[in-house]
Image (cartoon, rainbow, N blue to C red; front, side):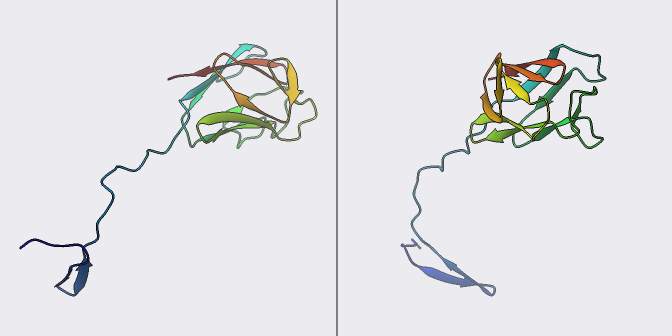
Length: 131
């Protein structure tokens, strides 16, 4: 038996309808590459490097709930957040007093690229994107 488009089969209380589907595979969701943030200069911390893959978000600050805890007076309780935005990673300042700096410029949000420099409080951080 050959089935044609729109044929219906009743099977054990279920009705199956056969429709033609597009043979092309759907495009894979676009995600950014894994990210590493590494302290290059600043006070000593327990974890000088943090790694993440999308859709993870990295909350940076001094609070107990921050995924990356950077201790020190110029770092805010909730200082910044790194998150995936489509195929890119973005850093967003969370209204900290001292601000978040990206490649020497104070920013509210910025797209992160491989080898970018970020400054959070007294910490100089290098961005690494693995392809």
